[in-house]
Each structure stands twice: as C-alpha cells, then as structure tokens.
Image 1 (cartoon, helix red, strand yellow):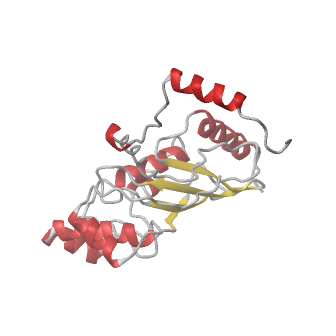
Image 2 (tube, rainbow, N blue to C red):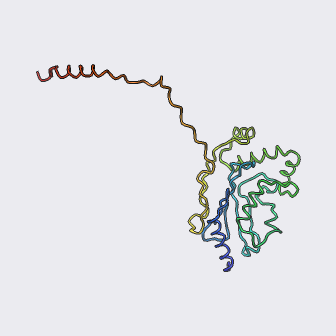
Image 3 (cartoon, rainbow, N blue to C red):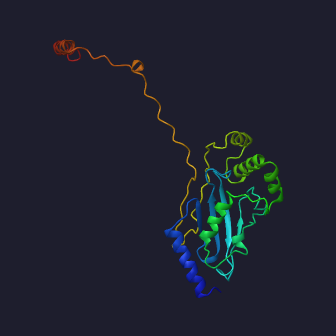
Length: 239
C-alpha cells in the first residue's frame, strides 16, 4: 500500500496540474481510485512533423515514487529515433537522471521537447536513426506519414500525398479526447472535443444590386384612384 508521503506527493501534483496546466499536454488519473496508473495526451506542436497529431501516453508509478522514476510509454505509434515500435522511450530523465524533485509534468514537458529533438547517436529505433543520418528529409516525411496514419483519423493515400507536398496543410482532426480522470474531483484537465478546428469559411459575397429584383410601387395618385374605384363599385354578390 502507498504510504502517507506518496499520497501527499500525488495530492500536490494533482493540484499543480489543475492550477498550472501545460500547453499541448493533457494529463490525469486513468481511474480516480487508482493513484498509480495515469494517462496523458500530447498534442503535436506546430513546426514539428508531429503537428496535428494526438499521441496517447501511459504512465505507471512505482510504489517507491517519487524516489524511483515512473514507467512511461507511448500508446500511439510514432516514428522517432528515440522511441521504439513498442512505445518505449530512450530518455535520460526516466533513467539515471531521475530525481525526486521531478514531477509528472516535468516528464511530460521532456516528452514534448523530445518530439522536437531527434538524437540518432543514442537510438531506440535503429531504422529511424539510420534514416535520420543518411536522409533527414525522408525521415521527416516518414514522421509526418506516421502522424497522419496513427495519430489522426484522416488517413488515406491522397491525404498522405497532400501532406508530403504541403507540410503546413491544415486538416481537421475529429478525435474526441475525453476528459482524463473521468469523475475525479481532484483532476481538472483541458477538455478537447476537437483539437484542431477547421477554418471558418468566409460568408458569401453580397449579390450585386443589378440582380436584386425591386418591387415597383405605384405612385400615390394611382393608389388613390384605385381606392376610389373600389369604393364606388357595387358588391355584385349582394345584388
């Protein structure tokens, strides 16, 4: 069972997550009654090949936390020289550089930085690392394809080709990301119904005046004469 120090530590981290949420990160308890299993989402930042992607991350705390690092793994497939096909991560912070002063928010920030820092000299995916060294443009292209294929729900061959030709292509990611930590009153994280909103179409231009039919109103004198004629005519139905 967890001791009081563990509960105090987790309580502080939950309050910090609620009061100081990090950009592009959503993190919380997987089950409010289980303080050891967490889930997180990283939203791919602009300027990286992971832009528009939503990457789920699993976090498991050991009973010795915070004196031992958490076990962190990507649940969403991702192409990265320091992340293998099982989602395991090569990150010094989670190994020999771990310290009890680090928090789960520090871990998530390190993962965000890792997505913009590819280190082929310390690889966890040798195929990706070799591609990065020999053909960096193809490597970036492969990162984008993996993002579109596994981190969005918009995958098709045309979308892949369009994304390769235009890396800044805007497309809608209609994943509904539920509030992590469900019914827990302790967890309050950003609620994303749609992470990437499609651009709002501009209103149609007004019709030219020449195409608008105007109803011609008779002059007042004609209206007066029509009114007098109507009053003078007998009602044939009553005759």
